Image 1 (tube, rainbow, N blue to C red):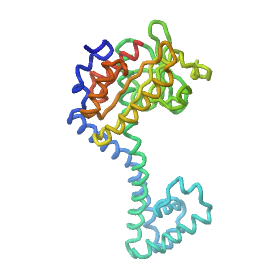
Image 2 (image 1 turned 135 degrees about the vertical axis):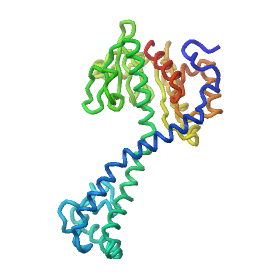
Image 3 (image 1 turned 90 degrees about the horizontal axis):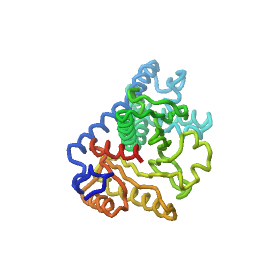
Image 4 (image 1 turned 60 degrees about the vertical axis):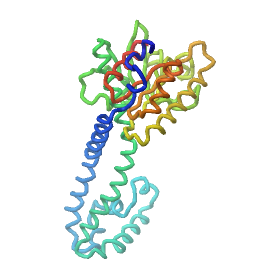
Length: 318
């Protein structure tokens, strides 16, 4: 029988991500991609209006304020522009106009806008490679905040913009998108959860770190260095694509094993847990076996609301 902390998991099958959740995850990603594309599309529309003032491709270089857009259309990323001199940029624009816009003749504005969107598409693609993890972190955070609220626990959150700890309210819109840490009290004891924290004991970043300290204690580096500070350490994998599920689990499992080895000398080492959106049958068997053996303390499928709330309640009560 499963121990109390993971009674939300009856067998390995309960960990497997159902097709409906995989489908919903892909649709959510597509929706987010369209949201993130809006600024680029609006930029392209504005560029077309301004570029239409030019009678010839050569006139584009004379229009004030669109030089960066011309460079983007030429295939240069924002990062690349930081390494170019003004003369380099002028030369790149001249070469772009001569090589690609002049051959387009009367359609040179359309050619410009299409090439601008092509480069912006690469930028969007780079952002989308990280968005699955971000969406997973947001979902986990929202569930943890909601669980804290239902349990009538006051909490503070680490604001990603100001890098300051602020009093939190569960009803605050999009608070999960600004949160890089949460803090609360359990049984009169301070608890602080930090995301993506570099743990000195293992010299690696860990996705989720629950520490027995107040947020203010983290300013003292000795708190982070002290192995006794860590209560639970977990890996969170938000990618929904089944094709990458096994690879995500291998990465997470290696990280969790590194944690167990690094903290192995402690009388009471930190608990370990795993939360994943894409969990396939074979990895589900491995996760469930680790739970039964006590190697892994807890786990949850990110797409299963019941499992996620149960895991969050367990974290709060540690």
